[in-house]
Amino acid sequence: MTPQGTTASGEVAVKLNEYVSRGPWVEGFLRLLRHKTALVGLIIVGILLFTALLAPLLAPYDPITQDLPNRLQAPSSEHLFGTDAHGRDILSRIIHGTRISIQIGIIAVGISLIFGTFLGAVSGYYGGKLDLVVMRAIDIVMAFPYILLAIAITAMLGPGLTNAMIAIGLVGIPIYARVIRGVVLSVKEMEYIDAAKVSGCSNFRIIFRHVLPNCMAPLVVQATLGVGTAILDAAGLGFLGLGAQPPHPEWGIMLNQGKEVMSIAPWVIMFPGAAILLVVLGFNLLGDGLRDALDPRLKDS
Amino acid sequence: MLSYIIKRILMIIPVIIGVSILSFLLIHLVPGDPARMMLGERATPKQLVELRETLGLNDPLYVQYGRFVEKAVQGDLGSSVRSKMPVFEEMGNKLPATLELTLFALTIAVLLGGLAGVVSAVKPYSIFDNLSMGLALFGVSIPVFWLGLMLIWIFGVHLHMLPPSGRLTVGVELQTITNLYILDSLLTGNWKAFKDALSHIIMPAVALSTIPMAMIARVTRSSMLEVLGQDYIRTAWAKGLPGRLVIFRHAFKNAFLPVLTVIGLQFGYLLGGAVMTEEIFSWPGVGRWLFVAISARDFPIVQGGILMVALLFVTINLIVDILYTYVDPRIRLD
Image (cartoon, rainbow over all chains, first blue to last red; front, top):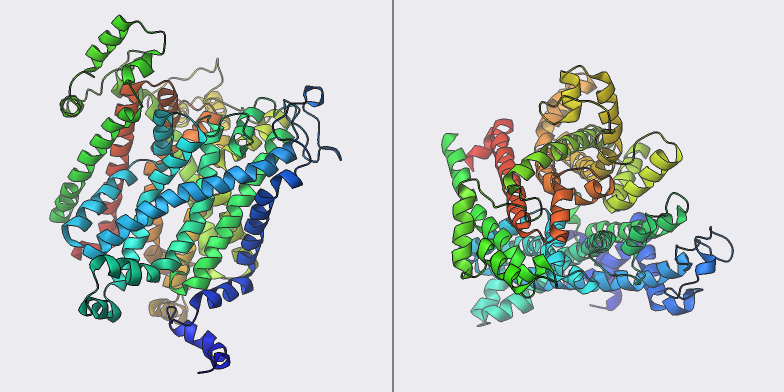
């Protein structure tokens, strides 16, 4: 078959079966671009990545150096978002804060993803008693309010950005494990898995080479939504004084410090909060869009 | 029916055991000596020895856990290190405030979220649908602590319309019966206290309702869409039944189950998880109590309080599960 023929029939084929070998990811990406709200999400996330990458070049001022004579300046052409109680430029702090957000997104979601995928895959694939034990353990963790558990773990380990990321990652594991287990349960019944078994593949190889690659779509969706949640939670921990510590330009900390002066300088809390909202919204839009684009079966779920 | 309920209760026993182990182990996440963490750097060796002795920290972990469970089943979760009050009693004092806030927030969430979900499903892809689903997306993305601060700034600081913190203005008399202030003021016919309590609860309840409202709206919409596409609904329309009857009597009743799940989960979750909202509005509830205890390393409260919050959650889920079988008898067969 010519490559041209593949593209021509591609769209119909993909609709019939998401997992045809002929580039469901490319098709998914194209569908994502046609999805208006997802495109907005993609743009927001793109801007976030771009800002984080070029933060030192984009930020007009240093995010940490204090400039007390210029404290609590209202937004102006010099300081677009105003200055905080230490005279630091809020826009610059928000710009540098994007780096922390990305870091949280990658590390916290990374922890949930790695452990959750492993637990979910093993538990779904082997089934039986192992599955029962893992699922009960997940029920147990999920019996605790998510944010309370994250707060408790962070506080016990000691406040700080690293521990906050670990805590958020840990409490997120059950969600990923459940998602993956569900998909693995359906994938493992497929004929090609039997074929792999017959051809003598080890269980390990079957899980990692044959089962998991077919779980990627829901995993990508979950992880995208998860980055938004992780950023939101880390900002919450920062706000409570448990996450990143001053003088880090983390958005939650900025809100925490800003609440003291918000009655006279509302811009101090307005912009960092709006930044959190925008970024979380971006990941949620993108995640919803990816769900529609990569796996229409999950639509509206 | 009874056998289903018994089976369901038996199923939560391992979860309860696990929950107790996890709550017990939480304080042992602390690097180093918990006693030193509680007393600080200036503690004398004698104080440390004494505290270790009273808390039984010298015994092996499994002995400590055994004692924790043994006392817990007798209703003794230890006493706060700071106030010396029993954990159980302190929790009892904090729960009504949280319950009141949760009920208020969930009522807002169910009414507005449910309505938005139903209307969106009846007219999918209309302007209203797009608008309310857009708002729902905002609802799950907005940081509650920021929303809380903005509400305080607008309605508390700027417009002086609503009090920014607490449950009741100092000096307002209220005879308490249930400790749910709004209910109490109504029961005693105390109009002044009712207005005061109501003005205090509005902002925290609105802030707290955003996430459940958004979730309820989305779940109601998708569940309704599914039901509205079914044959019996077409039959109902074809019979010429009025729209209101078809939508609420025929469709919503069957679409309600997933919504009930969300409401149940959120109810259990908010009873212990409203930390941010309670903290911002100085609402004297369970979430704030636990947060303060965690920050102060008041370990008996951390262990006992978190255990009780988790048990409440498990119990509420159990009740919701049993409620299901009334709402939808098909479930019992499973």
